Image (cartoon, rainbow, N blue to C red; front, side, top):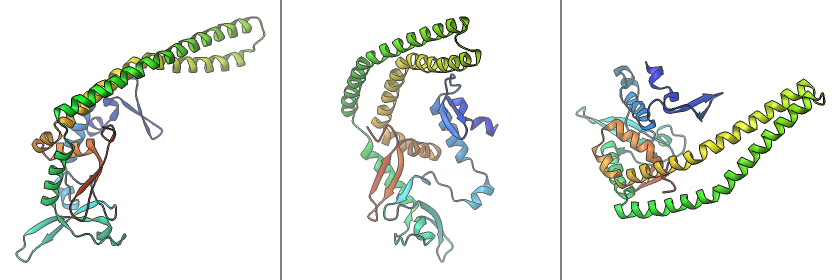
Length: 264
């Protein structure tokens, strides 16, 4: 069951020789549902794992600005036996980078990131303005791509004609069978590429427009969504928006963003 739930084929991807590619097959579940399932699986660690690993929804997202090292969790115990969980720089913890950063209470970092979401949430007017600008750019690109589609159609006709002439030459005894097979394979591969590009062309722009609307919709409500999320979905939000959040010594977050939010 775990193997099925973590199989990226169901969200439309395929694995080949260690690389991941977008498949041509129809997706079985929406991508966002698949990612939500991964977040739930990550959040349901066994008790045995929990004793060995300090897990938190910000792990893997927050970094020390000074050293660039990940912030990891350590538990400190006072004289009364009360445990205080802290984020500390892994560079300092392992004494590998000379980082002198002080530890930060996890509760403080949580509030810091929650407040940071307020800075990336855009107003309704900003969302509308950006959408209008980018949709206009899509329109311009689609108009310019009309010539590209015409060239693809011309190339397809040329290859069809080449394949027919090749076959006729073989029948006339001018082209041996082994050469015929090699040339047919080459032409078939080129035709498949061209046909895929022609077929996918309108879908690419439709998908891009839909992704744009989804992304802007998330930006318009980012802080509100994050505030209401449980830990599993907070982890998911952080993974969707940010490549990394760096915490300065003064506690000021600075982020690098995932696509398409780096551009938006």
